Length: 206
Length: 206
Length: 206
Image (cartoon, rainbow over all chains, first blue to last red; front, side, top):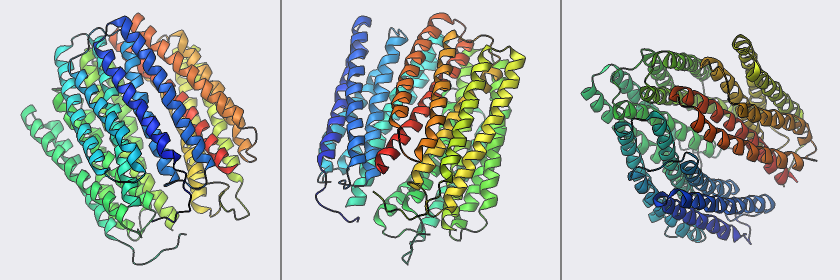
């Protein structure tokens, strides 16, 4: 609906796709970390922190480019919002990994694995969707599926909370585990927020 | 101050009013739930979750309409923000009810009733104010009163926190109760955010 | 890049500088409070609450002026965002002070002092930077340094968390201390958010 002046700087799509690709790497490292022993966990958390730095650089590149480009492929604020939202997904995953190591958690409840599987799937779908922003085609299946995944994550999260209070009698361990599963839930919310932004962009531009 | 092209799609006002009406239902269910026994609480939390779904549908209708309408009664982002903020109020109330059930909390501190009374009053005021957005008349009393209510909620919340740490010696029970009263405080903040947005809209458009 | 109609209302710069000046006062009161005995802490927390009220008034003045001014020195939303972000810095500092008193915490870990020193430095830099928004000169050193400070705050915060879980065996005391140090971390994040907004404004306007 907005007037468009050509040529539009299309490299934003590549930058957003790069950023989303880091999320796939991050989610996979997180999944690997859950099943690892403590020394390996420490290494994997370090790798995840490095991936988070790369994602951070990608976000800063987008922001800088955004501030210097006169014509953007769509609404400047939408690109800004999308880059920030992708960044949030990574931050939560990195924070969860860091706390698992920092809190010296021995064993995580099995259902935490289900939470992380949801994140892995959401990350893959997000990375696949970003390049499709160029044409704005075939995006509906992506945002519908990520919304469904978030509902699933929410159910897993509430079940985990109930299990935690039923089974963990040590309050200090409970505080640690509760924080980790809540950050993973925030990561799932962050992926949904990305999908909602993509939906808004697609509807506005269509 | 902005140019207006007629006709403006005024049905946004009805949609926002509908959305706010669900908040009244939600706050009343929450109040009822506090005094109920555990099986009744479960039923009431289910009803609140259903109300939350209805509110969610209302929000999605607003968002979809917003993305497809060329001329909106006021700034597109303001309508979007208002609908999201109303949604947040509901989400917090539903989450509080759900956790009370999930955590199998037996008895809640009396002052939690005061928190919920503030939410009921804020919900009523919000539902009454939404239709007045059409004319932008008589809104000041609404936002002033909701700001006052939020201050009151904040005082109740801090008193509750102090009481909790003075009286509850079981750390696990304390974690549960603290989370519930904090979510109720976030609900009061969310109502204030709605009121602040209405104030901003009214001042811009006047 | 936007068209500018003169005269621009430059008093926004003074209002933002005023608002930032309250942050310096607030951070210093917070530092003083850490080392004080309990009755003095109560008085200092009260003074901090008064400072927070003054800052609140400053924010409301900005918002009101913003809604009534046709031409603003830069993007209306950017001024709004900056005023809100400055407000958040103060809110977190006030909340931390209030909880230290409310929770009747006797002794705080030494490293909390390091967290507050970072906040004092960030507040000073912010107050010095605000008047430079007028010319948009010499701002890069400010936002680079505040970003560095936030990284430092993050490291201190994670060390504090590890120390807390290693050394505090009383879960109720742990809950109290954890909340205080997390709010201080949120204050550091809030200062970084201000700096990021200043960076965005400077890049857009340059």
